[in-house]
Length: 117
Length: 112
Image (cartoon, rainbow over all chains, first blue to last red; front, side, top):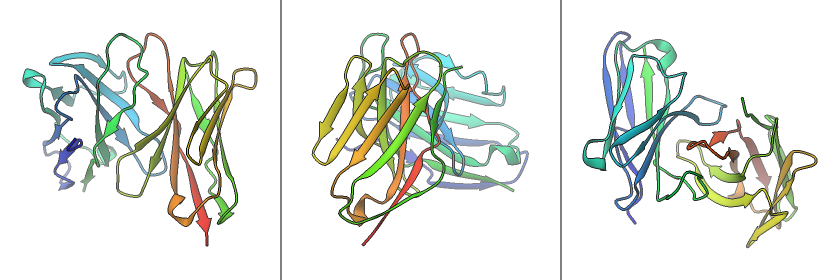
């Protein structure tokens, strides 16, 4: 178990630029999640994949955000035309889960910290 | 919407004491609750899961309770150590939802 890895660990960008983050989940896990966390807050759900299908997106996710998981392996999260409010830690998590009810733990990566100047 | 509330104030205790952290939820009971530990600059790490029909779960020095009458879960760390200092997150899982909803976490500081 090599764990969930995220790249890069830190990203500083100017407002208006596009950024892309990558997540490599635990290899046998079929579910992948993106969360966002700001200082002093808990992780906030962004989107969820089962294999390669994106099955749920948060209503809070603006059109500037897009995520993919080609072939059900790694995932990318792109933010277009970044704004200062996008500054946060972006966390990826994976789990091995069957059925609709989540009752197995999420395995998180250590996140990508985005700073928009 | 279903919410999770955790005490935002940090909890400071002496080494060797029992730390008790509180998680309150609104509206109907979640199907289960999960507790995670998060260290600065790192992702959360899973600790324990408790289902709605379970009163208590234990794992080594950790204990979690689930009280559907009080709409509350308590997380206990017995014989606390400075290495237990971290932020502890409570998360609810609901039937029909694929994603967990997290509270804002409570920071625990164990003094030697």
